[in-house]
Amino acid sequence: MHFAEHHESHAASAFFPSPFKRAAILTMDGVGEWTTSSIGLGHVHQIELLYEQHFPHSLGLLYSAFTYFTGFKVNSGEYKLMGLAPYGEPRYVQLILDELLDLKEDGSFKLNMKYFNYLSGLTMTGRKFARLFGGPPRQPEAPLTQREMDLAASIQQVTEEIVLRMARYVKKVSGEKYLCLAGGVALNCVANGKLLRSGLFDDLWIQPAAGDAGGALGAALLIHYHLQGNKRVPQPGDAQQSSYLGPKYSNHEIEEFLRKNGVPFEILKDEELFAEVARLLAEGKVVGWFQGRMEFGPRALGNRSILGDPRDAQMQKKMNQKIKFRESFRPFAPSVLQEKAGQWFQIDRPSPYMLLVAEVAPDKREPVPDETNLQGLDRLKFKRSQIPAVTHVDYTARLQTVSQQTNPRFYRLLQAFEALTGCPVLINTSFNVRGEPIVASPQDAFRCFLHTEMDVLVLGNYLLRKEQQPVEHIEAARQEVFELD
Image 1 (tube, rainbow, N blue to C red):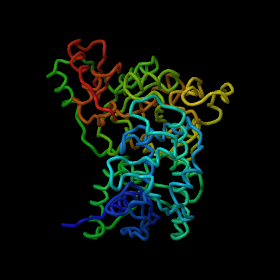
Image 2: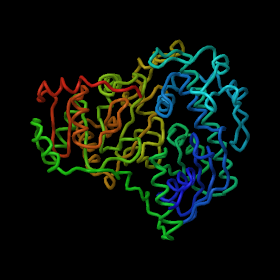
Image 3: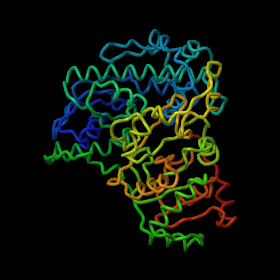
């Protein structure tokens, strides 16, 4: 029996599936054993960790402290905090740097633990933290105020600065051209985008399951290369098969489920299916899209996705409130044909795992009125681009590029939508509601379809329309209550 260390597993999950023969490695999370961040090197079949930062001084826990204080759930709501940041002003940055941490030039830091409660208490922050930021933590589900938005903007900016300093130090000590990232902080796609645009490294590769789920993969790869002595041959793109590593269901299995449960459906050949789904999307319908192998990691990548038309300015609000049952401010991600990505977004390389943020191309933006007197969520009122449903208030988007090689079915759907509308982009959000995991089976997908106001469900080549479903099925599903995320 071999015990792989937590950050060693993160590092292995970052380097071994990457396309690089050699690279620097940076891992950042809450804590694993005693380590909270590590710097390492990967060379062909081997990785080596060189430096570590130890608990309680943790970038992940610092970010989670602000997640808690702004009223979101720790280890779940960090995405919300990142999405909330563009609505605020980073007015607390200097206060955070002066009071909460002693940040060094190499990105290492010590937290001032008198403000935090996670060492001995049941909360992330204490009374001194509340006094420092003008009052008690926001209660979950309470209205968001400008303070929460400004706190989100501030901790996001501090996080980006820490990540950039760590990356500069990695570059200095390693001299490598490429960088691999893992750990929960590596899911902060805004920081990833800024790191890429900094030009410190020629390219990044980020483990799609960067959080602790990816540690399982990293541990297996450590055994494979370090203990068993297998030889690694880096592959173009990467070795993770676009993260489509989960279970899949054949058309036969899908039809068996549908017939057993008396579910009305249509079966369509591929060409008919892609054309019909594109037409429904262009009409404003919300589509559950269930195909092939499930994605490994927290992002839906076109196999367990809920899709919508990004040109519809009301689609963000509709999908947030009626499909996902979540806060209206949360942005949605676009999926775009890989060869068209540079025409619609300011990006010059593939982003297959939805882990980079890029700005919408200037010629796709729409002029907006003067916003100097608008604050917070009032900025949602204006259409900012030709694809407003996936354009955040700062003109950014967390995009997925889709290639014919990695996901031919999703690629063909995007092609069909572009042929109909001239737009090679779709909204792509994970096939679940808040508090629930992404659906894995046809049963899961059908249950989610009935519970929400989704219009259409596509399971393989089977198309289900909501208006054709038995009323008793819908009523039974909608009696369920989901926990807060």
